[in-house]
Image (cartoon, rainbow, N blue to C red):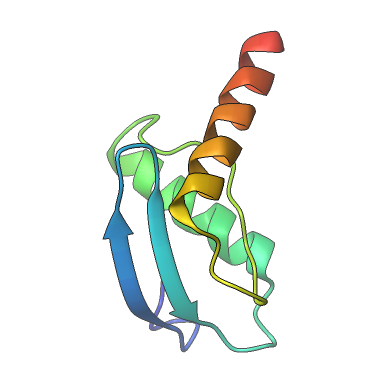
Length: 81
């Protein structure tokens, strides 16, 4: 998928509650479709492995504490549904 979209992963971190990527993706690639397709491809191999909720930013790299809070907030929302 990365090669097909002329994209590269600059860094990848595995944390307890999330994965953190830094990627270079061309401006003409629709990010929501790119990420959703990647999640779907992984979940086709490993059913329900990844949540379909994600955070994208091109401004600053959020600290892990912020990402943990975001992940917990998303879990709480899913439990309410």
